[in-house]
Amino acid sequence: MSDKVLIHQKQPEPSSCRRSQARSFITDDLGSLPPQSTAADKSVPPTMLLHRKYEYRRKLPHYQKPGRPIFVTFRKLTSIPLPVEARDAVLTHCMHDHGKKYHLHAVVIMPEHVHLLLTPLRDSSGWPYPLAAILKLIKGTSARSVNKVLNTSGPVWQEESFDHVLRSEESFEEKLEYIRQNPVRRGLVQKPEDYRWLWIEHV
Image 1 (cartoon, rainbow, N blue to C red):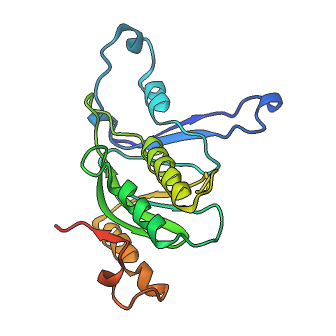
Image 2: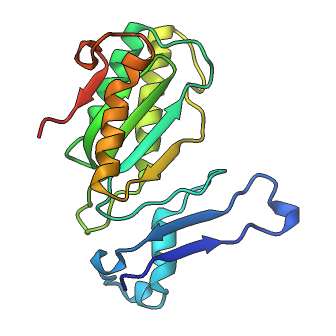
Image 3: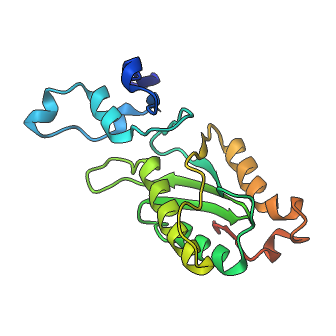
């Protein structure tokens, strides 16, 4: 059960697949997921249950492994920088479910994009919260707040997000430092700690 398993659903037939994309989920820790208890569940293959829980429609493949940190980036729909008050609101929304639905290791709100380093937690049934649901909540609530600040309406973030499952402690430290140094590389501050919209977990 420790071997990697790729669950992949084919796209619909050509007549109906114009806006549909392949859906996929990968895990190397199936044994740590909770058993299914209902009669209906017992008749469905475990891979299909996993697929239902972690499927999401996107142009890029997205992967989630239980207990593994994930580096996430999402960007504004336009290149217009977020003002101070809007960045305050986005940071608040990114941290809202820290310790509830995910463990947040680091976050930085840049003028046109956001970097997150997080590990999804498990719900009351033992299932890891799907990354798709986590991002949908963060992007949806923060978009409403940004629109309120700007007195605008409509989408704020690009639909697609980039996410990468970290494979090692070295990779974790590299991504953590990447987030810390992002404002410095952009010339926004001289030291990471001077950037108002950077939050790093203290261990």
